[in-house]
Image 1 (cartoon, one colour):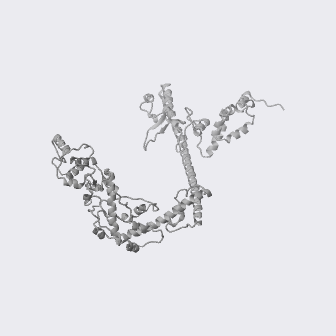
Image 2 (spheres, rainbow, N blue to C red):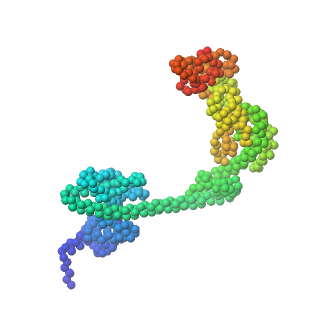
Image 3 (cartoon, helix red, strand yellow):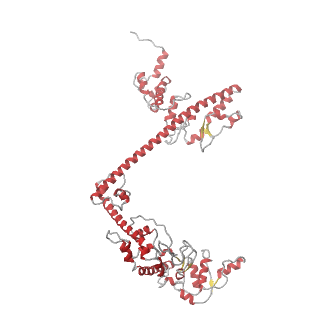
Length: 573
């Protein structure tokens, strides 16, 4: 049977639509290729157009536009909006699925939390191209064509949304240039009105489809966020499960060596107590070798925590028993120069021996009272003597006195009240100081159920773990206060000014004592203040113009010349 003749035009169209074998593409039936390509994603088709010339010629042929429509129909069934009528399927596929700038083809950074597409402009832009292709205003040329017209209605725009209520927009320069060219090509008012009407209708259509795609993009962003949160949640769940498995394995091994849930543990549970120790609650399987390295540290920590719990319990009993061991009235009757605070009493050697007794037997308040009440007055008197020695050594170091036998008895051993009330003097004078700062304590003590306070007792905020390694840290944690330390006393403030007074009496500041200075009845005058008074000729408040004793000169140096700007203070007898 002879072959049916076909028209020449149909053969040429088929040759364009059908990849020939001579181009390196297998000669397959067109309907099979159509079915295969229709099952692909639009982005896959774009990638195929960049592989070989036969693929590119076949997929970009207008006769095969049905393939692109079929792929878009498939993704539309999956939730994507339809391709808008003002764009081809290929161009829209590039816009939706390719992450490149439409001007310079730069690969753009993908931010899953934002919409990167300028839907109204049918493009993606990098930063430089965005500045060159868009504008925030109507071009002056377009305004001059019809100054009274609202050009924004005829131009697609993207809101800037810099802040709530922001009405400014981005416009595409190409859209405005097209309008300018169209207006310049005609002077007819009706034709110009038709151009404007068409642009308004096109803008309405573009805005409608842009809103559809923007809503779809927001849905995809929310979905990606939800998926990321679900992945993070599942990851955390898996990590927590691995941590719990490791923790239970460690608890099981500790149970075999005699450790179990005890009341002193956190929440009364071994698992909760060791949960926050290093290398315990981590998402890592418990290997035998790793546990052999971990076990000694765990046993040491548990033993220390148990011991700390026992000592802490005894300290709390001591806290309630101290008013019975020595009352406020009894403490005042001792007339101690520096009354100790409760933490200081807990650091006394006999008290510490009772608190750190190696046996695990709990102590009672009655036992502490019977053991400590008879010896407490002598212990406190000895404590004051030791503290005064410590203060003397602190003064020696601060004043750099060398081998001076009595550092607190030197003339320059001035000290300031640590409560910053402004009082200053020698230690013997300051011990009788009536401080009005802080809790308004008098010079010796403040009667209170909690204990005794002194002007040297500077309050501190203390935070310690109940399993602190040192006994002093446990004491400060229980009593919520720090123990006495000589460092609260500030010796040596404006030492040069004090030494200048002593030198005015022709004595060595490092060796001159209070008695030596008191035995010298001569007076001194402040040459610096006299010179200032001659220059000022006005208010002379605070300036010492009359001779004064050495002790008054000391006070004058610290009150008037405390600021370091008065480096050269001169005195004369």
